[in-house]
Amino acid sequence: MTVLPDKSSPLFLLLPLLFVSVARPAEMPSGESLLQISLQKSGGAEAFAKARNAVLTGKVEMAGHNIGGPVEIYQEDGKSYTAIDLPGIGKVEEGFDGETAWEMNSLQGARVKDGEERAAVIRASRMSVLDTWRDFYSAATTVGSEDVDGKPAWKVEMTPKEGKPEIFYFDKQSMLLVRTTAHIATALGEIPVDTRLGDYRPVDGIQTPFSMTQNAMTQTLVMKFDKVQYNASIPPGRFDLPAAVKAIAQRQK
Image (cartoon, rainbow, N blue to C red; front, side, top):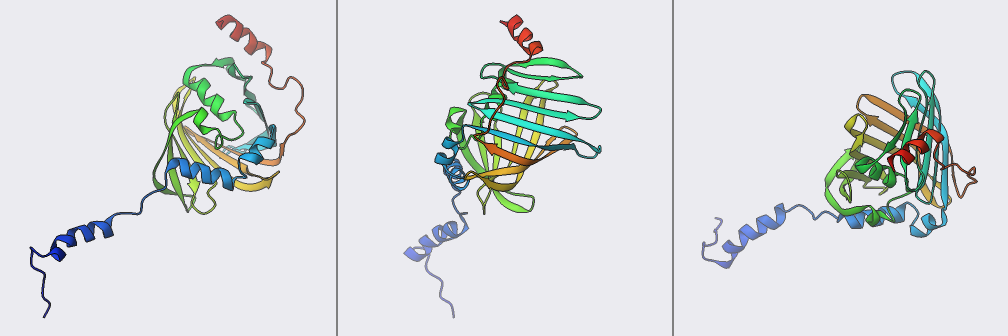
C-alpha cells in the first residue's frame, strides 16, 4: 500500500515546487546572445571589417507573372544603390548617398524618402547589422521560436531607434539569419514586408545569401544572385544622386 506524505511534512510542501520546476520551459537565449552567435557563424566581426564594400548581381523574377530581369546591388560605407529592370515595368532604382534616401521609376518618377522610411533605408544600406546593430536598434528581445521553411528558428524582436519593431529569425541549426518581417513606411502607406534569405555560400570568409525572396502586399520578388563580390571595383559616382532626385532634395532644403 502506498503511503502518502502528511500535509505538514516537508515532502508534501516541496511537491508543488517540484511540479513547477518540471513544468517550467527551458529559458530562451537572449536576443543579444543570438545576434552575437549569428555574427560568429556568419564569419565574425573581423571578416566584416575587411569587407569595404559589396556588389551583388543576378536576376529578379516577379513570381506568378512570368516577368524577370537583371538586378544589381552596391553597398559601401553605409551607402547603397539598387537597380531592377523588368520588361513592361521599366527600371526601378533606389539608393542612399549617406544623406538622402530616394527611389525612382518610370511610373512614379523620382521621390525622396524621409522619416521612418528613410531610417529603414539607412538600416538596409549596411552590409550587415549583426556587428553594428546597436547603432540602429535600441533593443533585441527573444520572443519565441517558429519554423521557417520547415526548420525551427529563434524569433528576435528588434526595436529600431526610429520605426516599428522588426522580427529577425535565426535558424537554430546554422544560426544564420533566414527571415525578417517588418512593417515599412512607403509612399502607399505602411505595408508588411516578409523577406526570406537562403542559399548561403562563403565569400571571402563571410556566409552570404545568394537568394532573397520578398513578399510585400500581393507581390513576390525572387532575387537570385550569380555573383557576389566584396572589396569590388565600384564605378565612380555610383552613389551620386540622379539629377531628378537632386533637384527634389535641393527644393526640400
